[in-house]
Image 1 (cartoon, helix red, strand yellow):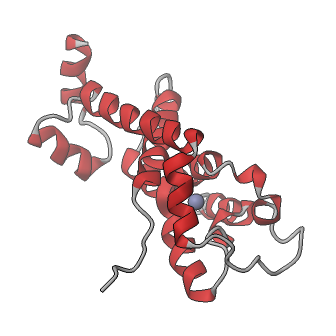
Image 2 (cartoon, protein in one colour; image 1 turned 90 degrees about the horizontal axis):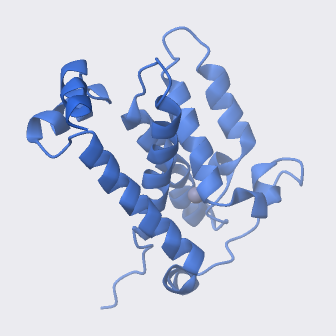
Length: 185
Ligand SMILES: [Zn+2]
């Protein structure tokens, strides 16, 4: 039996790595504590929502969660007390749109300026894989994303289980561990 075609997870690296890299860049001089977990989550959130939804509805796989409306609603909600952490998710979503080169799909990102309905699915799975294998920009994005993830893990000292556990628990490194890293780095 032929396996059902599925989208290889290669795009993930570009989204996760570049999203994380931009947050890291922003956090460099910022006194605020960045929750990198939420940034990483936001960096893949539009695809987590739109891919299954698009497949189910027979639409493009970039729909509502790839719009400015989605991003602005998320950011607006983050102004509610106790929900300010959503800003990190919003930041991740913004980087997702960037990596997706969403400006090439103005009817999506500027929804509903071009009408209330989305296009029906146009790319079949094989063409998706074709794009992934042959689009140099996509490949470059994956490589850059992977490199950023590796450098981040290295600089933040995520090589040890203790540090990795702390990262998963707090979204950033506890000051103690970070200071040791700074001394080393
Ligand atoms: Zn996407």
